[in-house]
Image 1 (spheres, rainbow, N blue to C red):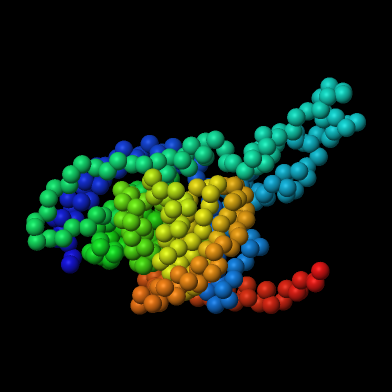
Image 2: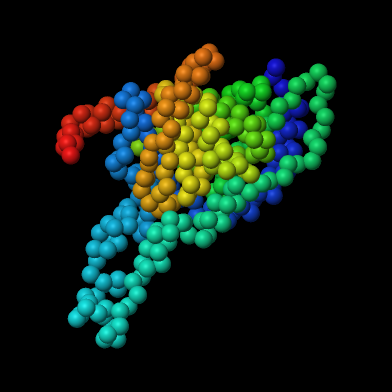
Length: 348
């Protein structure tokens, strides 16, 4: 039953007042959240392109903005850190018999320990910190059934949005969908990209299952590249306060017809809607390229079977998404052709 406007207004106002206390987290993380690539599954072929080049935005997020990960030419191919040539095995200006500590030593040690910088770890942990719920909301009329609102809070300091669903399973009005799209498309203020309605329903179900007061949004729409589900409006990277990545991923993997990725070092869970479920883990650091590994292959198949037995079907609809879908189809076709041309591995 659709909820009256006055009830929606009361719920939204209460949630907005409560969320004012989270602004410090958002402001702190404004310049720290990196662009993180995610696995993209071919809708037809059922595989993924692990060697795909990162987008221009992802390259800019890497050190020095040169798109080179550690081990690349920019990291170790130069002759000396200060641009001068070394003499007799020593750095220019160094005392003979002593070795100058490499400028990248601390970074190399950090990568060896497989931990992001301390500032990122503090920010990442703040996403998972428990948040108290607001006080009692105004009581609605007895004949009106009220559902908690979906609250999306971007961690990069962007605007928050509150949307009241029409049922216990979600279902958001066209106006609410437009408002959510505007907040999740920060780089397209004039023409926000639509978000898959079913993806919003799944987010709402996860938030209610864990009784979370809001959803920390790490990344929504991104103009990455053709074939990316972020570019199609079908994916989101998110965190629920007080919920671990493992608990969250384990729950959303049961939905069926979804892609679920766990990013333990970056500190979030990726969720997208797709025709065939696929689960993975990526232990790369925030400034590294993807290091994706498929997990729970049989469980992903079973999740789709269970969803069909519940009478559900894949739902990847995104309004006004024809151009992105055509571009994605071309990208998937090219990937399949590259895999077909790749030489078969030699037998051992």
